[in-house]
Image (cartoon, rainbow, N blue to C red):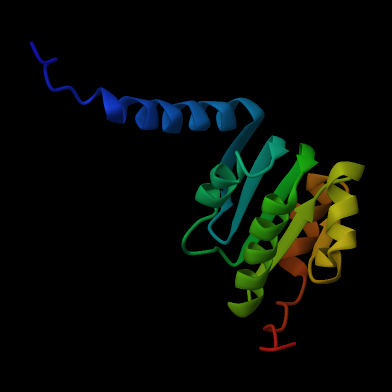
Length: 148
């Protein structure tokens, strides 16, 4: 007698997706904090890598506020996927003439930001209070020049 038809072939994929998301949520937490009407904070804690970067990307608002502070002070690892996400956020803010700042004083975050030159395009602040005070007062960055 043939075995009854089952959708069990699809179960591993669904389980894998759920497992991947659960894994990402165990290594990274991301919180969107509306601070003022023109300023938002995205705070991340943990590891930003290929498994977890989507959580950071999903936290970035579709419509950026005039000022955005990315608080990475509790990030323990910043991989290449995280660098690309941060670079995309910085480039988008620059293209839209919005102010953006990154908070971190830890080597695992500062070193990759410096190696890849992101620190030359965005203010890096050692503590959140500095960023909240200075980012809104900084002049909007010039738009990136295409091809440069």
